[in-house]
Length: 100
Image (tube, rainbow, N blue to C red; front, side, top):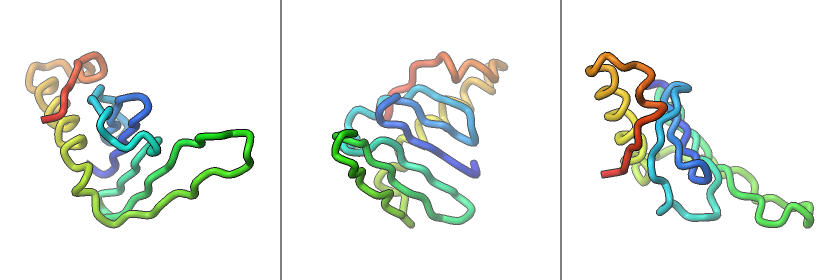
């Protein structure tokens, strides 16, 4: 894995651009997405614009530790691996994954 994007609002984790459904409902509702670059060991948290009429959106917050959200990435990666082992490389896009 090079990159991961956790989309709380869509309940999807993207591993190197491949979408995997993962329950992200217990992530703070103020978070829109968490992006992570494994090689650079850095990423960012993008926040939900809670009021598009007020001309203010919380700025992205840089992160250098993904451990608080690693379980979402691990769940998506395990789902992708299982689909590949079954010979269904596209199965991850339709497989319901739940975080462990």
